[in-house]
Length: 419
Image 1 (cartoon, rainbow, N blue to C red):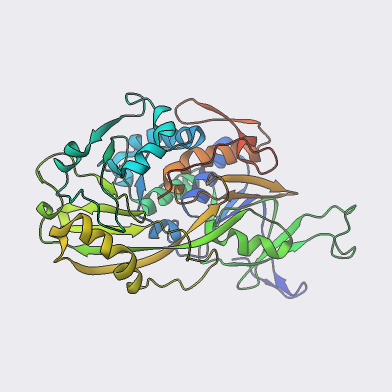
Image 2: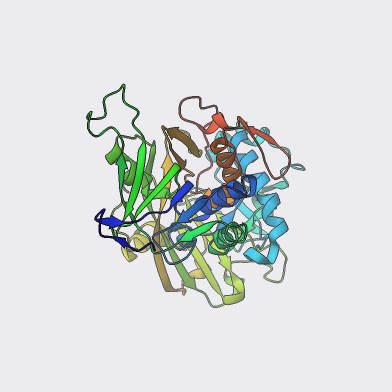
């Protein structure tokens, strides 16, 4: 850090063209793509954690998928996945697939979205009940409040990835291009111009500098906030309605005796992540370690605010365990071995990322639980917007208008398939 300046009463701050706050998977992607496009620009990526991706990125289920109801989500995810496939072992990519299970009622309600998809292009197959039970050692019958398993969609362009490794890949590439990084740096306040006029509407109000927990100050021409669930807490005090709110999500690791408790054919190549038709419960298999990661995408009840960050074992026993016991009775002797909690950064009402600017401040977030699977595309789009471009070229060559993800000129479809 710069030395203390006794004359000014504060630490000297370096000047940057861009400062990106938040080195999760989104912020690191933005930093990399912006530096790639502007190699001569002075860009700082900072984060309050000790390394990139150590916040909510590291606390995710770390799954990726291209199976979405909205065209916008599919564009963002498919182009990102294409890029990740090229990284392979660098991010521990494992294309295990998804098996999304539907009740009869859910299947009927999903037909409009499913009919928009191309099984060959989007790489999936539709399974009837018999085909599902040939893969999973599953109880497909209904018993209130749990619906039956009527059908499934096996999505092949889906799998798991090391989310922290992905964020660190982007941050490392950014640094290798000459980008500056500052970890263990927690931004506490934004200092705005226009204080003397009480931020009169005719004054040129913008961010002058930001200050960290040690009193260090940072100046930039443009500031980018990519702190995910913390976006609202950072921006609301300076009068910005980001449209993004945090919601707690909890994950639990279960030790099982053997894969035969879950799969009919444990030696088969089909060992997918599973989304059950009850309660938004999902399963990520780690069968080489005889372990399952389970979570739940609940709705009403969990507040949209930064609440207790610790996982609650009662949540597992009350909201997840009954679902597992119904659909997988053979798993009754598992052991709860690990638990952790993080936050999704939701954007209502469409569950699609936001890239918006006020004065010289841009925020990038609202990924609503799909940040990892869309980070590559979102980074490119945000970088294009920060350069003043109206269009971004995604990894698969798709052209995407930056304004589509703005709040003022938004042009996206509501995403229905949220986990």
